[in-house]
Structure formats: C-alpha cells, structure tokens
Length: 231
Image 1 (tube, helix red, strand yellow):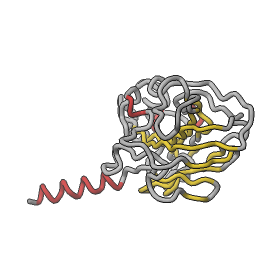
Image 2 (tube, rainbow, N blue to C red; image 1 turned 180 degrees about the vertical axis):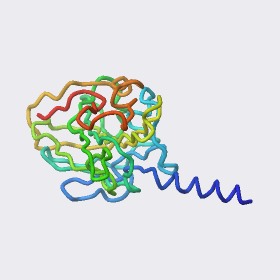
Image 3 (spheres, rainbow, N blue to C red; image 1 turned 135 degrees about the horizontal axis):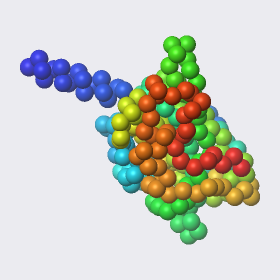
Image 4 (cartoon, rainbow, N blue to C red; image 1 turned 90 degrees about the vertical axis):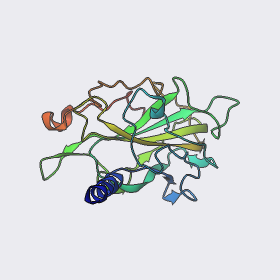
C-alpha cells in the first residue's frame, strides 16, 4: 500500500513539473477559452512533452483541430498561458507557417518546408550560477512580436519550450508545444525564411537538443532550428 501511495505522489509531482500551452494571448487579449483557436495537444491530460524531435508530433502535437481562427494583426505582441509554471531550463521559440492558397488554417496540417522561426530566447547565468532562460518559472511564455512585414493571410502559429534538464542523453530533451490557427491582418510584403519542415528541422544530436548545460557557457548555447526571421 505504501509503495502504491508513493507511486501516486511521484506521478502527481511529475505532472506538476510539466505543462501545456492551451491559450493564446494577442496584445493582452486571451482567446475565449482553453483550446479555442489553439489545437488541443495529445498531452492535454498527461502534460508530458515530446522527446523524439524527428517524430511527426514535433510539428503541432495535436490531437484535434481548434474551433476558431484568431485574428492577429501584424506587429502584435503574443504569448501563451501555461497550465503550470514553466520551470525547466531551455529556450522558447515561435514559428509561423503560411496556409497555402485554397486551404484553411482550420484544417491544414502544416506539412512540408513551410515553417519559419521569428523569435527565440537565449540563456544567461542567474545568481545561483545556473543557466536560465527568459520566462523560466513563469506561468506564461515570453512575449514575441509578429514581424510587421509578415504578409497577410492565414497561418499556423507554433510555440515551443524545450526543457533541457535531462538533455545530456539522446531524446532527453522535452518539447512542450502548441499550434494556433490564426489570420494575420494588416501585413507587409516581407519574404519570410528560411523555411523548414517539421519534422525535418531538428535532429536528435543537434547541439541545442543534445546538450549538458553544466558543461557549457551560456553564450555557447545554440538554439535548434533555422535562423530567426525578423522581417
């Protein structure tokens, strides 16, 4: 009986250490409810992250499409509400993928070399001489700005936070992510890039994924994926 109770306690503690991002916030306005214009992820209940960066789950980890498409003016400041404190060290990155002509953000799967990164975070060393990232130990992800020159149209917006506390072993990094269905308005005439596929952009042994945080300096960390497009 004691072993059973102990296992329940450990399971509860593990669940509290993990998180999902069910609600998009645009210029301070949150979506109507959880998983409204953000696609519900497979870990909505378990809160466990993706550990294989080459699997199809690395794209959106979605179990179903969302109800709505959010309106997001170009130049907006966005972030996500987390179900738990984002307590693991690692970068937060944001991607967009433009929906092809004739398709809809409500149904498109985001396959192919269509994703561009527009924001990432870099670490610093805190007072405890540990590597930490912006947004760590918060209940929301860091703010990011949709580049004003992003062309208007429907997109999938993807957030990921990569937990690196166990990343010294292959498939030890944990990816916490969500995709939202958005319509970008008042856009510009930029040419976003480089464009990458998810899966495809990440490898298990990328230096930003397979990494021992205790063995590198903060300025030596290399986030995985393409260069950031700033517009």
